[in-house]
Length: 202
Image (cartoon, rainbow, N blue to C red; front, side):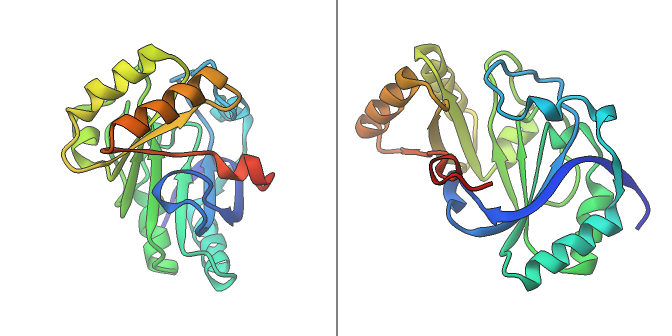
């Protein structure tokens, strides 16, 4: 499979967020993001031309090695991974190691690739596309203030089948308080924490 993508990093660790928290995973962090969230913890990934391109076959080989080491699935993240056409990458992974493929996206671009699991983390200042809302498996809203809760409520009415998650913004005491209180009184929502940061793992 031909094709290359700008890559910030690849690593084998544990999924720290969402419904698959605590599971062994191989991460491919792609470069490039125009969503520009002020609280983003990977701002170094925003400039695609600042990171080297890697062939999708080489990335698939890395995923295969991670599978041998115990990875249960591949996470394609960013940046914003759907700024790129992911068809060649997901095809290469499926041809090489057949690991399930998860994509983490803000939903601002058209879907590409063939993911087995879509984590949609939409942003108030740049809402997601309708087809991503319809296709996502989990909806994860980052909470810093009450406006984020209103956005979560509105967005939840637009998804078809997604598991609903509220995730406090890292270091936001208000976000943590609001997310905990809301999930306590709204049982359709679950609390997602960035456990990898608490555990100080990559």
